Length: 517
Image (tube, rainbow, N blue to C red; front, top):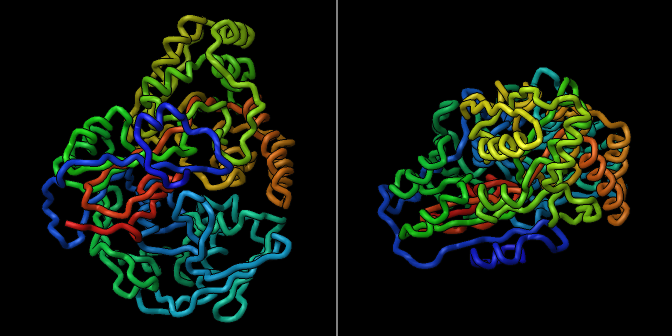
């Protein structure tokens, strides 16, 4: 069903479980005339994402927000790319790759590719780009993943050999992530000089990014747009208003409650893509009282997941089970008992934790989608079992640097990842920088390494299945639902298609869309 066009009624009625892999659906509204736009026919568009920061960066290794990912895919390329719902890696700067043991990988680079400054892409650029993730001072968001690179070396001018510390069948998929995009050799502070479809014209962190078409892009016929202005509008209602008024032509991260406004507005479309995106309640395991295992179990039985789906997401979400693998993933473990709202169990575990009647602050923000409403729902149910949750609603601006993972109870929001190994390695491995709850489980860490190099998919499914059960039973995160991605756009913007790795076609829209008056 990948890439199928379905009605909203069918989406809700059929659900989104099933299939042999991560599937994606597109919901497109028919009818209506294009609304007016100040752009004319020049192919110059403005797009709005929900988040931005003064820490916005031109360095792919440091990207942390959706605006960073979008910006980096406009300016740079990776060795591989993922640009459709199959989540399979495709050639990009590497025209081919091979490995016989999943430890040593040989990549053959595309010839004739040039950076925006006119210099030719060579193996030296790739070696530099991949090695720099190991430099502690860089602060790469993929430093934990890059620890698997035992060596990265040039094989002539257009060949690169990567030797891993252990087998990993997912390496081509991993290298498609925005953090592994290729910068120029020696660019310790990348400034946008990449090989990507657009050239940087202006960059104001936290404000805007303006890019113009790279007329010498290595892929024939791309990009079609002349320029893109990327801005941030944190407030979701304001993003919708900007789209409908013609101030922007593409927005992401819509609340399902806003979809009717788009459906009723002539000249605009919706694209709803089921994904593994989730907002989770983080219970730090390295501090008390949230590190108490009975408290964790009390929280996991204090959530009415169907209510969250129905009231917050208009039944467009998928019920989750307190681990990060969704039901439509090929390695999903369907045998784990589903956590449900059970006030008796929640009350008993709370009493065992000794926290009945204790006031506990929980930090929520619009920055973590749905977290404010989730916190309110949990506050209400908590009052029925003796849990006194005090909801602190904090601004979206600065939430990730000021509050995320910095309190015993706070909310996170994790973007989709293309493989189970990536999400487990980045957010659940004991040594991971983004190990949100600060938990540690030695068996989980051992299984992660074993599954990464296992060549047999059935065995890998067993290993990942046990890891899901460990997270479900022991980890200090509560994941109620997986959130569908909702983009909205002016109908004159053509070529949008679902990629379940994030909004805006997995943040890669710029290379593929076109403008037609």
